[in-house]
Amino acid sequence: IVMTVKVTVTGAAGQIGYALLFRIASGQLLGADTPVTLSLLEIPQAVKAAEGTAMELDDCAFPLLRGIEISDDPAKAFDGANIALLVGARPRTAGMERGDLLQANGGIFGPQGKAINDHAADDIRVLVVGNPANTNALIAQSAAPDVPAERFTAMTRLDHNRALSQLSAKLRVPVSEIRKMTIWGNHSATQYPDLFHAEVGGKIAAEQVEEDWLRDTFIPTVAKRGAAIIEARGASSAASAANAAIDHVHDWVNGTPEGDWTSAAIPSDGSYGVAEGIISSFPVVSKNGRWEIVQGLEIDAFSRTRIDASVQELIDERDAVRELGLI
Ligand code: NAX
Image 1 (tube, rainbow, N blue to C red):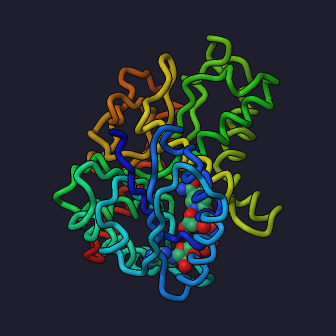
Image 2 (cartoon, protein in one colour; image 1 turned 60 degrees about the vertical axis):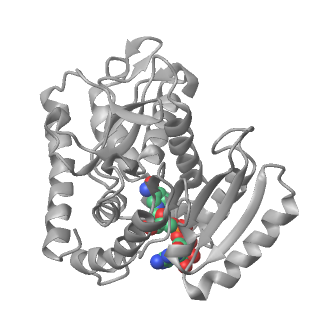
């Protein structure tokens, strides 16, 4: 018997939600053989809009979609959930200090973590998309002591895909010829997209580009791509973010291809000198439904400085939420 998988999406009425739900319902998240039930969590003011999206989902008559639930109560929305995509978050508004931002998000991700702890299925897997994603994931994780810590992850797959695309354009090769791209650290402007382990045609990517392009164009273009999208579109990345969330969960559940890896922010076990416990992006493979950090990579001084700077930012965020009593 094929079990129906319950997928909970928070912020379901938002723009990423709108780009995400139809792809989940069509089978792109888990595969064409897996029926899904969608659970949409929204704040009370947005429940009506979520109902509208649910009407459109109905109107697609997706064969794999076995039900849609809508709620503004996390306890209900996460009840029996197998996969949780935490998209809804409190954005930074003008004049907001980092402490205010973390506090506001603590008020969202703490209770959601607790609801996951108390109500989700035993095999729950959580992907945090809402920013600041890594630290929001840490907050949710620490509110869910009964769920294995490794089930809480944050999304750097969009950054990873952006890095693939930039390198593909630079070297005029299809994305499919690039292997072993890595995003290290925080999903923020300090992230480090690493070309020293990426391979194109079996050769190290960093050796196929000019050093100044790598340093002065590639790294900042990838790290600041989100801002460039806002500038061009007048709205933040939505379809590409939804696509990355699909990629992340798809690979987590189904595994990464042999001979390649991807990037995901997962709880650090201390690998590569990254402080244990913080949720930091690493080169990862997925095997038997679990992420594993790729081991044994040599990190040169150029990469070390950049990884350390991004990890330091995550440590600072962790210390700040600790001081606020959020973890
Ligand atoms: P929108 O503002 O369009 O939608 C957010 C939705 O979340 C709204 O419908 C809102 O009502 C809902 N919401 C707020 N608080 C909630 C709560 N407590 N429970 C349930 N729902 C709640 O934002 P959108 O463009 O969809 O972006 C969502 C989040 O993704 C933002 O935090 C954004 O910064 C983040 N992003 C993360 C990316 C990543 O790579 N990790 C990239 C894209 C995106 O910027």
